[in-house]
Length: 335
Image 1: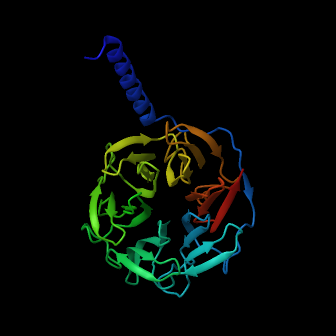
Image 2 (image 1 turned 45 degrees about the vertical axis):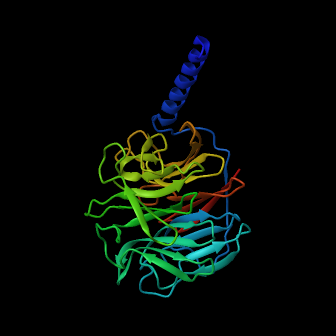
Image 3 (image 1 turned 90 degrees about the vertical axis):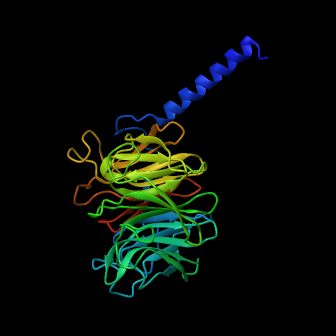
């Protein structure tokens, strides 16, 4: 039998674990200040053409930057402009592909095998509403969803916006940018495109989503969804259980979690109307407790019509890449 002291020790450990879990799940008021150890690095990228509207950016295991833009004012569907860029850490473009496959770019991910996944969230000219998987050299490997058609079924999407990968290779796709279908959820596919399951639903309740705008996965396979119009980051385990709902990171357009358990959130929309008491900018904290540690303010000329970046990604050296739609640029921040 266990001694009384052992039982007390176990009880204390259990209480401490419960307290830590509760602390990790806590939500705080929006943070509008904090240290800013970063500065902007200008003219870092050398591309074959200027970026079009761009909010999709990620970094692969080799610290190469991948960008996915909307080709220009008329979109990608009616031209032969390639919207996917692979850019080396030295800023030189290595690859540019994907011409003729998309309507309007939104999310991008690179899986463990080096394949590239692009989420196309609008429908135009018989294209869009799909997630397309490419090989690293730009060959189309598979297409998920029905081209140019939004729908409620498991074989079709309602404005897919983001892609990420779990440790077992399964692919996380979020959908529900803002159409009238009220289908906002998280979908899981295997790497070969087989549908596995979905969780969450459209709404403002606990664990629901109103505008899932970006997604990230951490080392524990926790899934972070930027639920923009609800002004929160929802955190789920891989089975769909809600672990936390954080508002301290503002009105999230983009989210990224690095290998050091740091979370980076781009807020491009907060103002007195959409998210009172919160300002636009980039907030950085720890996924372990959800506390915001750093705040990068928006550019001096930022406004509702010329907002700061939406997409965000971070390389292994801590350099931040932030993609801005209206500004048609990817900004690089370094410590």
